[in-house]
Image (cartoon, rainbow, N blue to C red; front, side):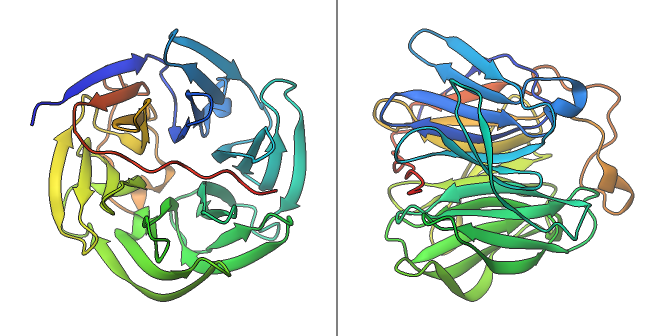
Length: 307
């Protein structure tokens, strides 16, 4: 099959993450998770029809993930908790602090299930200790811890039938699958879905297509990988940069894949694991947003947060 890879935004994100396609507006959102540490804007919105990119800055916070709200605006997993944010007014509103007793942790990746719950997990900012939890923000704004023992949460996503939840702990080299109760938001039957202990790359952000296959951005190898629901690798697509961070279906027919990446070369956990090669400067094009088209595969719409 012939497919095309193109760079759609040259933005040099320090840590591009949380790609999100809004099926209602046809707009594409993403964040630069720790870009504010380098004085960069950290929230982005692309109009693919015009190519216009709008940026916003929350200079006091790292941003792990964002999602759209049912009644407008964004909900975000920010370093110290859950927040509402309005892209137009730039108003930031705290919902709930998370892990206040763990100063070295921050919320990282997150997504919304098809009952409007926002699930996000933490990461150890030193990329070393499994001290982080997995949290669920319900539409009534109550917060529950539904998992733990995580170093770095990435790639939360659901099967199209809502029966399986996937999430990665990047620095434990594992993606887990759980049984998911869509009525209650509860997890059970944790099991290994993918192990990356014996390969060069590690799993980062993920999404699930309409056929139930899991697409994952793989750090270090610079590939996006499609796996069947039973964990079998079905294909790899090499990207122009090595550190691709997350993936999301978009486009008018949800048949294009948007891919974020990072220009970051300093990794505090490097002394504890050999995941990242030593670099003196970012690879050419690192931190850009890319698009893969012509795959003939469709994604599923991302739900909106119900609160």
